Image 1 (cartoon, rainbow, N blue to C red):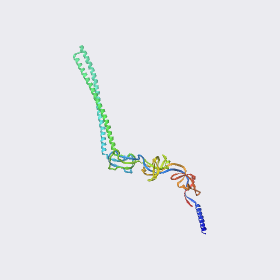
Image 2: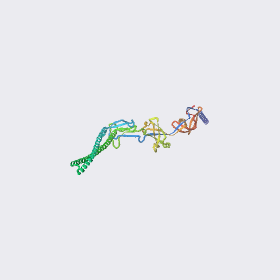
Image 3: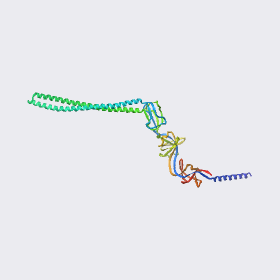
Image 4: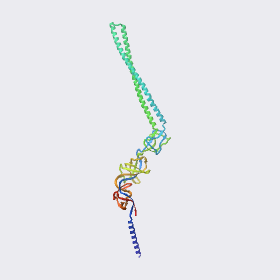
Length: 413
């Protein structure tokens, strides 16, 4: 009797189970939110974390080339400076005086030597005039000498034949001798005038040479003094953000073999993004691929760059092998700073005009992808073959057509 009661109970339980199974199978799924299958664009991306790093030349160390006390410091850490902005001033009183002296010396040479040269040029012109006068005198004396010589020879011959008097002969002789002495004196005067002209001309040439040498030397001293004076003003060689300040007003800096560092300027457009790509994904990465990334500080801003380098040496972090992919060429680079964590998408490829559905429309059930297709208001579970997917959409390769309605969310009726 007990066995019969137990058997009846088992039968009742089996019947009840079958009833509930049948009832549950008869439950109908109702679409709550639906979308249409459409054509769109889907990206194939590799996601990886990274870090902003300075390139070579991103950090510019600005130093001093002279020793002295800092009398003015215009910047602090975090300030943005443009190329040519004044960063600091070193005590330059002595350098200013040296510059004034060099400038005064240059002006004195530029003022006095032209006057000396002009005076010497007048002396040369005077010597030239004296030489010309002496040459004219010599020409006259030569003519007079020839005349007196002819007269003396004539009187000499006449005196020998008795056709003139002794007195006339003696007068002609005396006149000839005077003319001869005057000619010699005129020749000597020309010689002296030439020597005088050569002397004055040489003095003029020497004065001009001396002027050029002294002018060159004075200009060099002035330029050197001006350059040394300019060293007391320290300007930004490039635009960027002040990332380090080593001195303050009142401190003394000493310039030696290495220029003492005043500040370090970080050049924003010299930053690069080091992306740590897993070894399983590195084979997909190529130079020139587009990179989109965000940083924790600016979650709503997307930065863009391109892959420029793929380091061959691996980096092991927490027993995982990574390769460093370097991206550069960002817009809005001034917002980025070294060591910021980056969240990257390296775009491997883009498919356009393919069938797509939202990611949350595709489910993984019993080893295959399915969607809830809506036909005549009823939900039907349909297997699909998927392709690429990105952060928004998944490509449907097979199982759906454009315009089909699918449910993103369903409920049981």
